[in-house]
Image 1: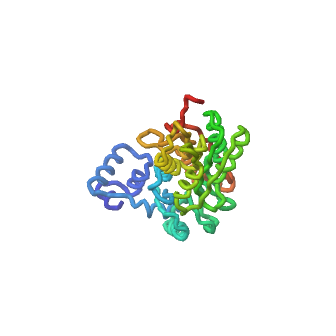
Image 2: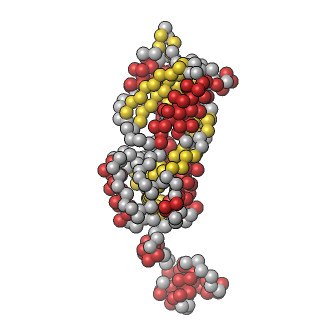
Length: 321
């Protein structure tokens, strides 16, 4: 900055004002900007952040960017941070529980202003003064959780299958043993089935188990070439797509023989990959950022549930509803 001041022929304080966006006379501003360009001067934002005890950087912990739902979250959280003039430090954990804790430690050492995390470590430790917002899982007192309304989503899926004329449906789930918000999709679906008089069966496998269990389950429910279910709800679109491929291999047509509904709202080239319960990802991202950067931490709600919606994606026969 001293070099810039010397080149521009102004006081050091004038350079500081221009760099920090404070008002100065136009002639001074132009001279400083020309000197900055000539000398290729760049502000050391990290040092500036340390001085102000604020780095305008937020860490995001996410399992991966390969799964479409996670990738969509990363995209919208980054956009929400950019609108607030913040930068994102992306930490992909690959479901490694130890790595999640290590990234939290690393983020704190790098003086980020807060952390947004979609995590699976049941013993994840967050220091008391670390601003943290969780996605889909309540971690502890003082840490807000943001999620879509998973119970309502499961119920909506059951109601939609009933509206489509289904009478005997299946619920397919792969999930974590953790107590988290997505687990409520099961209870919502059961509630919807009971309310609408649907008979249902469930196949639940744990994270890491082979999807072959689903195919075995489907084979057991085929009689004389016909699937005994007329509707299937899968707790993610990824499972739905896998199940649709299995059904095709078994000679069962979707949606002619069976309706299939997923959950997440994944799109491919702006088209839904299957009929689905849509999570409001842009709103989830914005809420996470707003809560994290809100100054009055104790006033933050423990749980924010955002509404879901249904979207047809070609795996249901909408005209029969």
